[in-house]
Image (cartoon, rainbow, N blue to C red; front, side, top):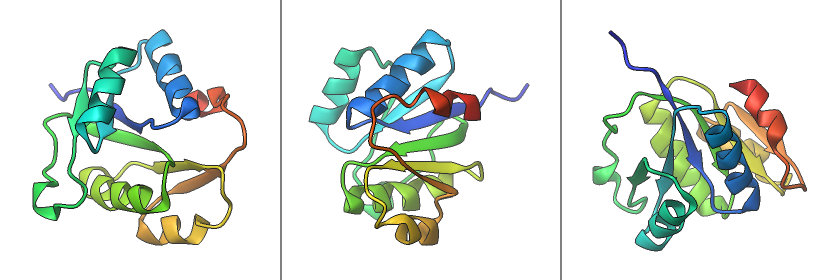
Length: 133
């Protein structure tokens, strides 16, 4: 029997945290991605129990996780980190990758790296994203 795919989330900001709250409230299977121990601890304290710790500077460590990755939602904290996450996650899934940003500038960069959708928002209410699941 095939495992149910999990949603993968990078949640370095309030909008990302709100999205995780919605996933938890709807009991949707998900995992979070963190690129350092402090981020991992913050996610653990937030109640996330499946966290993929990834060193984005070491491409040799970008192994496919044991979890079947479905859609990916990357909440932008920096252009550099978001670009690295897209590169990694594109090798992990053929499902859509969403980048949620407050800046309209990096749209073509993200799309060129493999993001399926780049969503611009100024608010932290991202409940509309749950409809994409």
